[in-house]
Length: 294
Image (cartoon, rainbow, N blue to C red; front, side):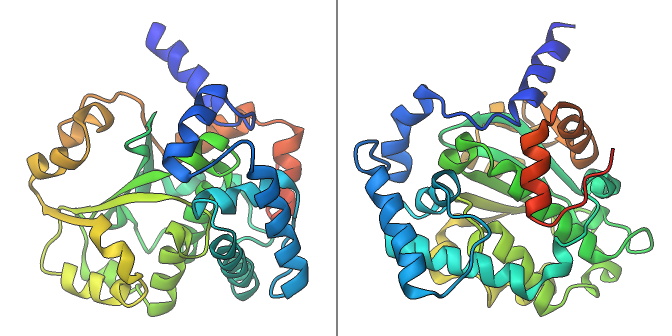
């Protein structure tokens, strides 16, 4: 009972958009944030947006622009480039967010999951099990839509903006049937959501449980991965001890030899978001193009 109460509190906190004083204490170390100069950086970024005219963001308020500054360690020109890529991505692929039924993405189930135990060294641990996707149940676009929704909802939290995330790509069960659905466009979209065109801080990415299909799978992706990101990508095969050298078992679910009990799949997570959401959440998501049904 105690554990369930704790988990419910954690789910409710998923919608918290207030800044925690403790978080702001570690923000300078993690993302070079300085409370005395951050207002100046936001103003500079906003001015750059209007002066250069390279993008037309849906918002330019302080809270929104802060996401991009945190993602790029408060280097304003880099934050601006990321914002331009974010806006371009939304313009190029409107079908991934426009008129998408948010709660309808619960059907993705176990393909996406996360451990709600956020630490400065790991951030939010997210797990993608591409081999669990059944192409006969829903199109591959729904996987991308789900990844985008999870990122957009997560980035409403200042905690996630600062701490960033760690990703495990578990390729158990990967078959030719799934690999055949992978196209360069799809690979570009996934890499974009993981940080190429989104204000996410990617701490590291870990590839596990792969077979001979990995070469095909990764060949499609690698040309979209920036050179500087390669040192954050790790291959472990089926060696969980190798994985645990990079990720504390305290943060890993039991299936990977860990002790974290706070692992939830996409379906449960979205159900809790639906339960605890407020009017501001609905407004924010509708502004992004999503349909919010009761």
